[in-house]
Image (tube, rainbow, N blue to C red; front, top):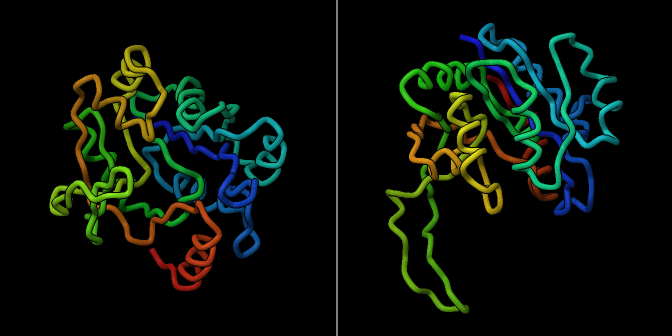
Length: 219
């Protein structure tokens, strides 16, 4: 299979005080490095496009010297950044991943690639554990049934032609992931079991979790 990977590393890190999260070093290497390293180990991956802000491209090139890696410039929003990356890919399938989720596994990547044969998109999910309530104006409207609720992770994989169709038909405003765009054009989105450790680094507390997981992490 011809799979292109887009790794999004263009976030502005507002909840981390403006820090470029993907370039925070853990054990001497930027967080971005760990995701790139994992995708490079998968034979089905034909190319990797890393999306960075223009001021960070030289920094990224300095430690990502593999000839199979290309770069795209980030947009104003995550959705725009992803689209910029997708437009630079050539594969029949495109896998999209947040650079600040370093704890992915080769087995998860291969599972996603296998399942895309029977769907327009495949995403990893985990069941919601806490009680979730819908609140309006400070008052609870209802308690949502947990058995139907899941948290979503990346990487997510798509048939590229279906994602490109979604880009043409659906506005990016309000889209928190690309699966949402495919849903809106009636595409099929399949789920697979995610990974508990596959956290997204967003807040200072997440960095504490990341360092703790890194000490014990073994694929």
